[in-house]
Image (cartoon, rainbow, N blue to C red; front, side, top):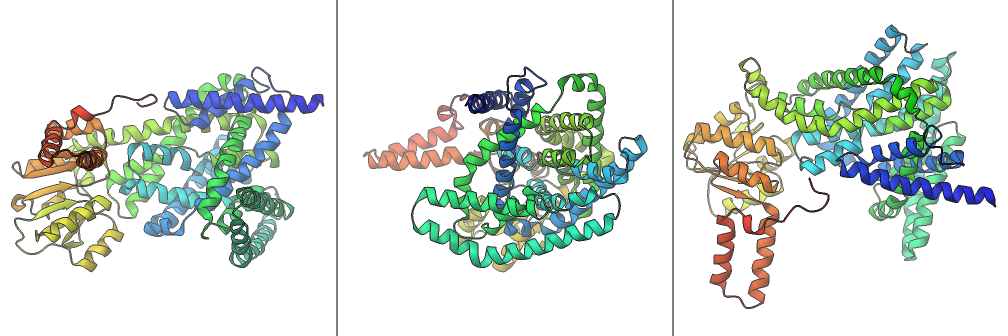
Length: 578
């Protein structure tokens, strides 16, 4: 009974302290997982030593790993990957391959590993980037729909998909003798398991989930999903494969069925709860004394890894035809070590592929790179703006070549240029076409271009802020320019360059933040629209009309708010906002 009481107290302490650590990290603008790591370090055996049942907490943390990869499998979408499939598949393969080979060479040269297999393992660990931190940062910056955002997410999705394969072949890395045979057996096991998983995922699992959902019992549905996740994970462990791979495949089994979103919604609270225990348990294994003694080495490793990965990623993105701007933003966004590297590192420690001391050094290195990721993404646009002033690199920032995909009518004039053909841009184009105005769209997405071709709408392919692209749009004879880009940096650059070419052009721009309204106005935009404020104004207009307010008064009030650039309705800074 005493042992059970100690375990309950330890679990309560671990969860409560993790909540405080995550809150502190959030207040400091850092990923919550860094707070969990710090929590584990403080309350763990190398810190204050507050926990008595550390082994049981770490056993629960393994469930966190399973749920983490199960949710990743459910969220995985082939549709998302198809949009940028070329750089997703080939680009991620080049990036992971080159990073692994570079780390293998340097680690052998420096004597950091004792065998090529250990170097190969270390390279695989360092080759992954952080889906969680990068995605969270892109969402906060409103850049998930930008070109560089899509490229980052495409590479990250492919990396996450490769994680299951890496985890499956890792047992073969332990076999120093007959590695080829061990690898072949591991791949054969993977093939047999995946074949069985495909069969179950097509004929058994959908019917099982459907029957459970038909009971309209939330408890039965949740229990079925949890049992599926842990059951498949257990099967893979008995086959000599990894629990993590089994959980990921279990997620893939239900990713394409109608109840995938419901299953994900049920599992997310469990995933988040047990995942925080996983990251806290990782922190419990970190020896702060070792980190302090080796701080110069860790900082050196952080510098080499983040700079090295950026240097590797930059030419890969350029190789696939993207501009230098997109390449810089992508390389700055993917040069950290990912959270799933914690999973690989722990498996490697258990398999004897890395020593306890180097494991602790590796954890400290990963944590620091994750902490620096939001800063690197924030610095990237500023680096581009500074490089833009240098004549030696200007032509690269403006594009590596002139746009070749053009559909511009000869002698076009008095037309409206729409920069961006996303959700906002497409609606805007539809409105203008319905009124008979000539349109020219600037877009850099091949998917969007297919729609434009089908509708026979004139377009120019390329980055809208690229001067070589702007030359093809006949700015000087245009009637107006509407900027509907999802990227704040590109919006500002396009505004400046368009006015430099056509000072009297009527430009309306979309703002992404409250502060950007004033910035774009000062740069010369005739009108700046903030989508959230406009939605609120429309809701307010309908509500006032329902309450009996005269139409002329409503129109006058809304016009006054717009002329004042929304100042009277801008919200005050809320708690937690930065």
